[in-house]
Image (cartoon, rainbow, N blue to C red):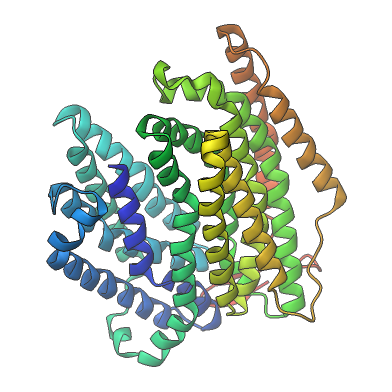
Length: 439
C-alpha cells in the first residue's frame, strides 16, 4: 500500500504538469475565469490519457516497481489519478477566487472523506489494502464531482493552444520540481528500507507522519494566499506581502512545534504498536518538525518565483536538494539510524530554501524576518527539544497532552493574525471579486 501511494504521488505530479499553479495565475490575470476553466479541462484530458497509457503498459512497468505484476491494487491506484488531479485543479481555481466555502467542501471530501470511506469499507467489507484503496477512489470521485459542478470546466478551452502552451512554460519546471520533492520527501524511507529493513522503515514512517502534520498545515495555509499575493500588481509591494505572510507562518509554527512535540508521546503510542518502541522516536519527530522552518522559507521564495513566472529555479533547487538528501541518507542512516535520516531530510530542505533564495531576481530587496519572530520561534524549538528528555510514564504523557491542548488558543490567535498576512503595506486587503481584484 505504501508503494501504491508513492506511485500515485508520482503519477499525479506528471499528470498535473504544474497546471494548478497556472490556473491560479491565469485567474488572477484575467477579468473572468474562462481561460482558467479551460486549463481545468486540459487538466482532465491529460490524466485520462496518461492513465490509459499506464494501464496499457502496466504489465511491463509494474513488476519493475516491486508489485506482484499488474495486480488489482495497481489498477485501483491508476483509478485515483483523474479524480485526484481534477480535485487539485478545482481547488486551485477556488483558491484563486477566494471561494473559501466551496474550497473547504471539496478539500474535506477529498482528504477526510476519502479516509473515512476507506476505513468504513475496511471495517465493514473486508480487511485488506485493496478494500481501503477503493475507499480512496470513491472519496476522490465524490470530491471531483462536487468540484467540477462548482468550477464548471470550459471544454472549448482545449482548443485554446496559446494559453495552454503559456501554462506549460510555467508548469513543466514545477512538474520536475514536484518529482524532485517526492524524492526529497520519500527517498529517506527507501534508504532505510534497504539498509535497516522494513520494520525500521515502518517506525520511521510513523514518526515522520506525526512530525510532518504541522508542516503540512503551514504549507496549505501559505498556499491558500496564492491568489491574493498574485493579485498585487506592484512587484515591490508583492514581495513585501510575501514577506509578511511568511513571518505570520513562522509565528503560527511556534505553537504548532510545541503542541505536536508535547502530544507526540501519546500520538506515537496510538499510531504504533509497542514493538515499534515509540518512546525512542521522539528525536525523529523533533527533526521532522524542525524541517518546517526551512519549508516555510522555501514556500515564500517559491511564491515570489511563481508569481514572476520564473519556475526553473524552483526545479533546480528541488533537484539539488533531492540528490543531496539521497546522498546524505546513504551516508548517515548506517551511522545514525533513523535520526540520521531525519537529519538528512532537514539539511536537504534547508539547502532547497537557500538555493531558491539565492536564485531570486536581482534588483529588489527580499524582506527580512523580524528579530522578535526569530527569537520566539527559536525558543519554541528549544523548549520542544527539551521536552524530548522528559519521562514518558502515563502521568507525564497525560500532563504533556494537556499542555499540548493549551497551545491551541495560542495557535488560533496566530492563525487569525496570519489571515491578515496578505495585507498590503498601506493596509489594503486584496481579494478576488467577480474576476477583478479590488481592495
